[in-house]
Image (cartoon, rainbow, N blue to C red; front, side):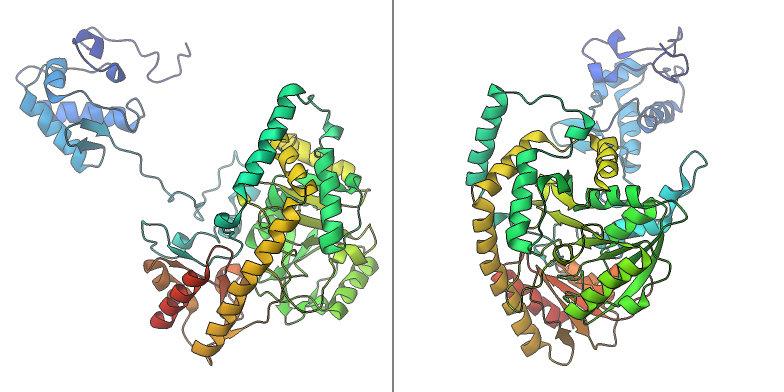
Length: 517
């Protein structure tokens, strides 16, 4: 055994005792302790100190049960009252908890920072790559968590208007369960072989289904060999950043406000990330820096403002990219959901194959838990993308890929998207109607033909992060524009996601907003 281990190899001294010395002692308490000197007036302090040390250094793990007072008294050679005082002191310190009729247990460790968040107070360690210790990286990844800026209630918010959420109640679980069961049976009868790296571009039937699906829904013409399957859109951004960025050299332009995790992926890769403003026509092409190597955009439904990039602006962006040798990363995160207005094709469908990397996801049209996305890429980049993917996780889960491929091929996805369009359209219309009737002069909703959220600009003098903090205390999740900007916000507004909020939720949530304002 490694002699450097501070406890596992520590020899038991002659005057020490272990639990096995006492009949009936818990096997969880197999730790050596020094019994207090007989007659000592500080016996309770000694017992408390030794138990405290064992809890803090991990020898007594959270959730483990301490012996009863009678057994511990025999174990330590002290009175039962002495043990009771020691346990009481540990309870006051928050190290143990008593359960009525059950006993005393080691308390769970306090988590700092709170669960679900990354600390923005990172202390760089010379053993770490400094790129991963940048505070702006943690801030970009924390945008989702309201507790970053507010004291959130312990209970989950009952009315959730955060953008990009979906309503699992609408998903055809029974159909997907049957499809998955059939694919599992296929795997049982013919287990898939362990593939070589070049074979891990993704399950071929899934890549074929993706090419067909986006060809019909988004007018993106591609072959299965142009598709790389990823673990969601975020991994797609990470892979693209790894392949397209030379640390300290590559300049990446990203919409401001924009999607913070996309920004995080390129920051983590060492890119020089430059914010570019957005107006009513989308990304302001004239504001792009020169030189710039990568331009990241959401042309169909800008996140979070919700505008669609105009045809003139799209043409200008494609012309800019060709002129300056830049590539475009197109995030089409919810492009399947078009409700009205003139259909706008994806940039990838109007560009040369060498200009645009198209990123899609199944998190919005199916379920986020599937963790499946994809990149449609030019062939010159595909070998490098596959290599980067294989360095990360070799390939996405085969069974999930097989099930989603069959789900698409059998027409279930197309039917599900049609259903979602009808439901989401009603939700969008209700939000816009209430905002125009009840918040006139305070909130002005942007016209939104696509997607799963509505953005509304504010004319209120107050900072809306304070409003959203108050709403969270009322169990209403609502985001302001502020968290999506690189730095200080240049405009005020609110983002109303309706993917997870039904019509009743929308009425209740907007009533709560009315009351707070």
